[in-house]
Structure formats: structure tokens, C-alpha cells
Image 1 (cartoon, rainbow, N blue to C red):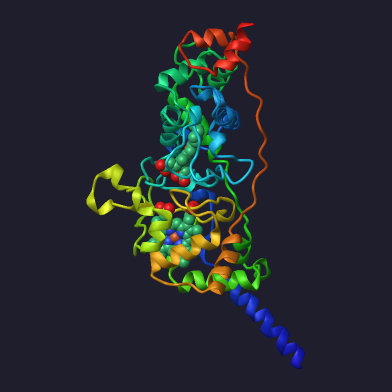
Image 2 (image 1 turned 45 degrees about the horizontal axis):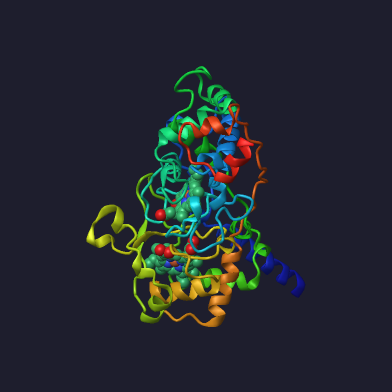
Length: 369
Ligand code: HEC
Ligand code: HEC
């Protein structure tokens, strides 16, 4: 009799938890931001994705022929570069930490400061950023690609028109293809997702405790929603918050978070000083170092910092440990990635040099002998 009661209680409990599935936290591909002129359906979609993958991995999109999108957003791993701030062309160091490209299709605004909206807008930025890929302008990048027959053919196949046409390749088409590839970079079915769908065993006891603490202490005031980056927003509207909200002299001295004014540099509104888009916490265990300046190497320390400067709380060691266990449960399943073969130059590097593209001098020397 006793046994039956216990079984009933356990069944009741798991049913209870299963019913408690919180819809706010469900990752759904239908929440992705997709523009009407670059839909993720229809004929030719796979070819477009494959072309985008080639471009994403192609260092010829940078002035020196050495830096690809993947250099700073390694999709074989967490989708970033595991360093404080990234190194672009000619060894130049940028000022901000590289965010992951995994699940970036769900952001209503792109970048730490939200200065771009759709992935299509974003993808054009790095190509001409002087310390990222360093192309003088977009026409220089397009001229480079036009010299590669394989690309002209692929663009014509995907976007229509003739491979020999002057506008066979445009920067808008480049951005569309890259964005289509990026929209395939979705990680589903994390232990947390399975737990939220009713599998009570998907989380360790510590991670469950961490999830409770995460909610009770107020992390969810900002990190709510399917991506733990705030409520669902229409494209172009960001969910921004001040950081540090309650500055702490010691933390500021150690990490210098306030130096970069964040959103203010985009809008020049006083109220936007030191405000930032609330970042996703999905796959956060894989994307150290943390924060816009990459100043914090360790996830426990990032949680301690958040407690202190965003909530004014000194989280205990065990609270931090269980929140970290919960954050580890946000690592999803990564669809297999393969490095693409890239189409070859037909005209040789010398011809490229004649459109005054600065290539690595060592490559040119090789080419001349
Ligand atoms: C030299 C390193 C570097 C290269 C090369 C680079 N990125 Fe980035 N990327 C960054 C950094 C750093 C940021 C954040 C900058 C900021 O927020 O001000 C970023 C931001 C992004 C974001 C926004 C993600 C988010 O969470 O807001 C996407 C998407 C992205 N890059 C895709 C690309 C694509 C596509 C390419 C190639 C065309 C590329 N990146 C090339 C370093 C790089
Ligand atoms: C008032 C809003 C707010 C609250 C509350 C808040 N955060 Fe954050 N969180 C942010 C913002 C904004 C950032 C981005 C800061 C930056 O680097 O510019 C951030 C960044 C982070 C990061 C680093 C993300 C990355 O990609 O580097 C982690 C981890 C994090 N928060 C966890 C937490 C935890 C755990 C709590 C609760 C203890 C919490 N946050 C509470 C707004 C908040």
C-alpha cells in the first residue's frame, strides 16, 4: 500500500513538472528573424546555404586574404574565438569580444550595442571594418569575388541572371547567402530544453537548484525568454540594459567595464551611456571569456560579477556553483559542420594584385617565381 502511494506521488510529481513546462523558454525556429526577400524555403535554398558557408570560410573576403568570418566565429566550436578581443587583418586587435554566431538569427538586433538589425545588415560590416577584414569598400570585395569563376557561377545559380553579368555578384547577394548559412546555426535540445519539456532527469540536482536561484535572485529580470536574453522583440528593437547598473569600485578597477560607452556611441543619447543588449546565455559555457570587453575569463566569476553589479547581491559560493551548473545545462546540440572546398582563382594572384588588393607579400613572392 505504502509502495503504491510513493509511486503515485512520484508519478504525480513528474506529471506536475511536465505540466509546468514554461513556454517562454522554448527555443522555436519559427521565432527566427527572416526577411521576406531571403526566405529559408523554396527551391535553391540548399545552394544558397552552401554558398554562404563558402563565403563564411573564405579568407579572400579580407584585404590580406588571411581573415575569414570563421577566424573570429569558429563554428567548429562555440562560434567565437576564445580570446578577449579578436585579431583582424595585419594582426590588429579589436576592442570588443566576439559574440557567438550560433543562434544569432534569433537576435532582434545584432552586436553588443545593437547597431545592426538583420543578419543581412550585419554581414556587410566586418568586410570593410579596417581592423576586421580591412577591405577599402564593398566594391573592392565584390571585385575580388568576381575574379573567381566558381563564385560567379554559384551566385548566378542561386540568385538568377548570367554568370558573366556585371552584377552577377553584389554585396547584398553576398550578405544574403551568408545570412542564410547563419540561419542554419541553431543549437536545440540542451539538457535545460529537455528538462523544460518534461524530462525531470535531464538536469542534475545542482543545476535545478541553480535554475531556481537564477529565477529567485532576479537574473530573469533581464535574462528571460527562449534565449535568456530578454523578452521577444520585433526586429530592430533591442532589449538594452545598463551595465554595470550598480558600479562597484573594485570590479571597475579590475575589469574596466565602464570605459566602453556601448549603445551611447550609436545613439549619442545620454541615457544610453554604458547600456548594452542583454546577451544570450545559450551555450555560454563554451564562449569564455565574458562580457563586451572579454575581461572575465571564468564563468563563476562572470556570475559573481553579475550578482554584484546588476543585482547588488553578494552571491554565496554555493549559489554561484549551482547557477554555473544551470548555465552549463544551456549547451545545446550542434549540427555537424564541415569545412567547404573553396572555388579557385582562375586568373592567378598577380591579376588580383592589379586591382590593388594588398595580399600577403610572401604569397606574392611565391607567385612570381
Ligand atoms: C576580426 C574578427 C571578426 C571577423 C573577421 C568577423 N567578425 Fe563578426 N564579430 C566580431 C566582433 C568583435 C563582434 C562584436 C562587435 C561589436 O559588438 O561591436 C562581431 C559580431 C558579429 C555578429 C553579431 C552577433 C551578436 O550576437 O550580436 C555576427 C552575426 C557576426 N559578427 C558575423 C560575422 C560574419 C558573417 C563575418 C564575416 C563576413 C564576421 N562576423 C567577421 C569579430 C569578427
Ligand atoms: C539588469 C539586467 C541584468 C541582470 C539582472 C543580470 N544580467 Fe547578466 N547581463 C546583462 C547585460 C546587459 C550583459 C552584457 C554586459 C556586457 O558585457 O556589456 C550581461 C552579461 C551576462 C553574462 C556574460 C555574457 C557573455 O556573453 O559574455 C553572463 C554569464 C550573465 N550576464 C549572467 C547573469 C546572471 C547569472 C545573472 C543573475 C545573477 C545576471 N546575469 C543578471 C544584464 C543583466
